[in-house]
Length: 528
Image (tube, rainbow, N blue to C red; front, side):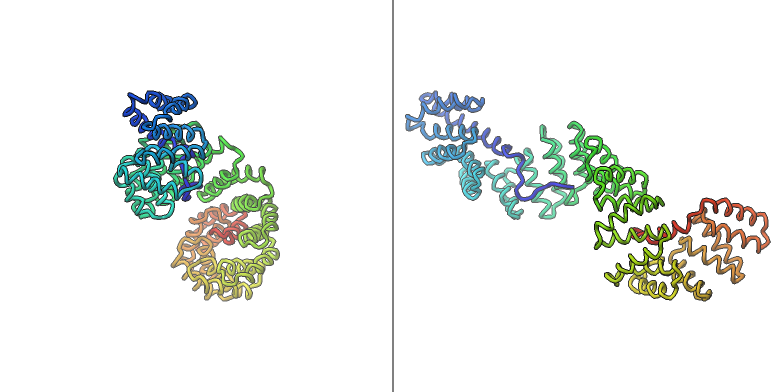
């Protein structure tokens, strides 16, 4: 997600100024009305300013400059006109003259403060706003300016104190609500911040980018459901928008709604199909949700646009790897690894692909380099140990697997491979003991049940073997080895009809068997 209050946020360069100008124009009209008998020209000028007819208003205001009793208001009108014309230096000059003649011209002071601010003179502007509050303690524009400055400086309690007398006025403007929300969130009053969402929903004609910024401020500070509501309302009230959908997707993720997030990413991509940010984030979410085909479709689209991006190549290759699309995975991962030679995930995932293609020596070389760089990484020690086992280097495999469990005792894959090493070294009793201990903690680890059943059958402990092998088949019905071993066991136990059925199942599965490759990939996958 992007955006939010960065300490210099303004709701458009003219939003606050427009409200100040309207306030000033009304004050000017009031002042002029007091002098209406002798200052008809100023009355006309004030009316023309409100109508936006600035050149005509200036002509009328200059007629009143010759009258000392009306001169202050005339300068104020001229200053306001110059402000609207964005001729700030002249505006400041006129407004300063007006205030020098009549210090209680609040409208002139507000315009002057805003002009100072736009000139990059914030301290002078704040001094004027403070003077306005001294003259009129309930002046909302001045209090908002002072409160916003306090918020930008991290003085959140001071900002809340400034807002308190006119908090109702703050809640009727977008920038007032933004200041309040920031103050509440930074003072850990999330309940009060969340309640402001209702006030925001009641505003009318709020530009959609303001609603996005307000929602993202809430979302980043943990006020997520209310942020979702604001963005969903903004989506309903505006034409299709990439920005709304993209940000809404991010907030849905914070709200633990990945399905809605993916739908929002799709809508975002409908308006901007080339967005790599949306494609990559959608791909990552789909992968996390196990929707691998959907994830792959996003990665393919991203890869077409930026074929040499290492992060895209890694994502594409990783999902291909999970889908056993090894011929597609390997070249992408090889290129990604060459572009990021020092990044562990890139080298590790390439090693996984090498294992999947039974290129064990290449995988060993990659993993050895990684272990040399990070010997205290239990995952790397495990991966190297498992590859060494697959190569038949049992002693070396055991050394790395023992280091892995020493670094991270709460795992099952290294214990499983250590049991296989013991079995292959003829230490069946040790292998049995390791597997039984492993299954006490992880009873649903299918490969361990499968090997345990095989060992128990070899020890002629048939009832225990049957229980383990049936569990293995239940956990992985497509395992050729588990079905075959169970068939042999049932035959030895004299259960011929069931044995024949089980062996026939194993024969059927054998034609499509890639279980060893898939098992190795799964064990090497750093996400597992």
